[in-house]
Structure formats: structure tokens, C-alpha cells
Amino acid sequence: MVFVCYEKINHYIFFLYYFIMSGLRNYKTDTPQYKFYKEMHEKVDLAHTLSMRKKYSKYDKCKMTIKKALSMMDDFIDPSDPDLDVPNSIHAYQTAERARKRYPEDKELQIACLIHDLGKVLFSYGEPSYNVVGDTYVLGCKFPDTIVYPETMENNKDYFKYYDICIYEKNCGLENLIISFGHDEYLYGVLKHNKDLHKMTDRTLNMIRYHSLYPWHTGGSYDDFMKKGDEFILKDVLEFNSFDLYSKEDPIEINQSVKDYYDKLLDEYFLGEMEW
Image 1 (tube, rainbow, N blue to C red):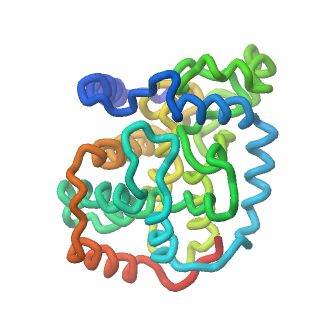
Image 2: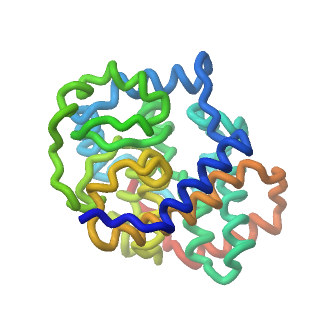
């Protein structure tokens, strides 16, 4: 049984329409983004992903507060994003502000929007961009055409290996999928590892974990792997993406009072240094 609902279909149609009308996520060829994804799709196979999971499963790279991680985004511009060429910290505040405007009482959602990209601190460890950013995809099964620049997947070592077979059973559940490693999975792991040092719940942690899995939440792929309950994660991730993606159209006006508001929220939801 596959858990798909009309709400998901309506969201998909809305996202597709908005992409076309707004020009967001317009991935053209012969661009830096095309070159980025070409390299990513060539190098990020199942074996590579498993090695990255193992490499970052000890959380022994450093100790720092969530505020420190946020400040590091002042020095990072996402090379995979065709819509933004500003520091990631600006995008973080804009995303949070969109959520606050719609849900002024949902502080946890606002915090999730603020910190969702902080796994990109991976860049400070010397990781190449394809281990840090970009849309994610599932390994160990056929690559769907909903992956950005799908033609470049043909150079992936796993392209033919899993073309007719799959390592997953139907309805195995999202949590059992091996998804290409990047900032989403890394921050999710950091927060789960340091669970006693913050007040975030599974609802917002899943928003963070799956927000770059566009082939799933926007492309309609991987539905066969969803189990009962995953449809609620999908609903939450789509809601989150309405803040994340469309914040890119907002004026870049983040003043000190906005920063002070989130500074207090971070103090409320996080306790001291975490292991990264």
C-alpha cells in the first residue's frame, strides 16, 4: 500500500506552477550549477554515501554553540543554488521570518527555519561542495528523472547496478532509506546526538532532514517507500519549503531587532556547546 493523498498532488501542482511562474530553481545547462551537479552525480554513489555517514557518525570534529554555527554562515554562499548569491545567514533569517509571519506563535518552527542549513559547516572541514550542498537523492535504487539534471546520473557507478533491482522493500519507511549525505543529514545527526542540549522535536528535525530531497517531496518519486505516518512528514516538509524556497524572493532586510529576537529564541531552545 502506498500512502499518497490528494493534498500531496495539490502541493506538487502548486510547486510546479510556482517554479515556472517565479523562475525559481531554473537549472540551466552550461552554468556553475550544472557543473556542480555533474560532479556530484558522478561521485556520490552508495559506497561514497556510506563512507560519509561513517566519517561523520562520531561527532568529534569540534564543539560549538548553535549561534557559532549560524555565524559561520556569514562566510558561506551555496554554489548549488541558482537563485541566491548572498551569504547563507541572510537566507536563514529570511526563511525564519516568513515562518514567523504565518505562525507567530510557533517558535520551534521559526527556529527550525533559522537553523535548517547549519549543517553546511561541513565546508569548514574542507569537504568538497558535493558533500555539503545540493538536492539529495536515494541510493540503492533506480535514479528517477525527477533528480535535477537527470542525464548526468548516467555517469554514476550505481546507474546500471540498481536499474532493475532495489535494496529496499515497499513501505520500508523514509528513515530506512540511504539518502546522499550532505548538510541535511549532518545537522539532523548532530541534533539527535546532542538531544539533551536542545528542545527540538521530531517534527522539526524531520523538516531539516528531508528538506533537500526534492525528488521526493516535490517530484513525487520514492512514494513506494513511504510507510504509514510518513505522509505527515511530507506535509510538514512541504510546509517548510514554502518558507525556505520562496524566502529567496523577499527583500534582504535583516535588522538588529530581528537578530535580537532570534538570539533570544536560540537561548531558549539550545543549551551550550554541542558536539559536531
